[in-house]
Image 1 (cartoon, rainbow, N blue to C red):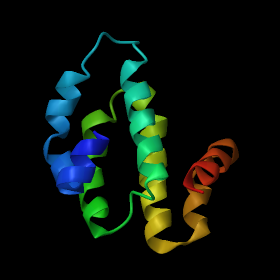
Image 2 (image 1 turned 45 degrees about the horizontal axis):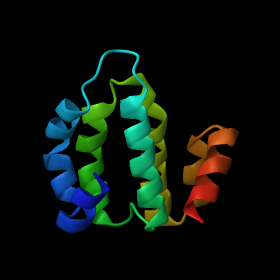
Image 3 (image 1 turned 30 degrees about the horizontal axis):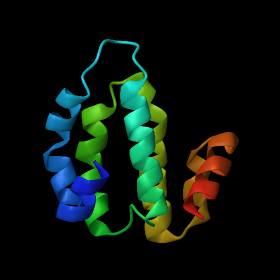
Length: 110
């Protein structure tokens, strides 16, 4: 996922989100999809992403593609909040997360 976004841009990630979803389609209760999205978020944060209008446009479709998987909801929320925070540099964006998650996200974005 990270390579797709890095090499072809965030818009490509949103365009292939359904294909990615099918590739990660595993039996209910599997933690694998959540681990993949968490790893993707970690790679993004390490690269100083997601920031910019391309990410703002691409993330809704990407999030929609995975939001019905319970194990993906927290990392998807982190990616969404991180994008808004990195775009605006407004720390009140981080207040949308519970304290424990906010602290972890701030550490990941450093």
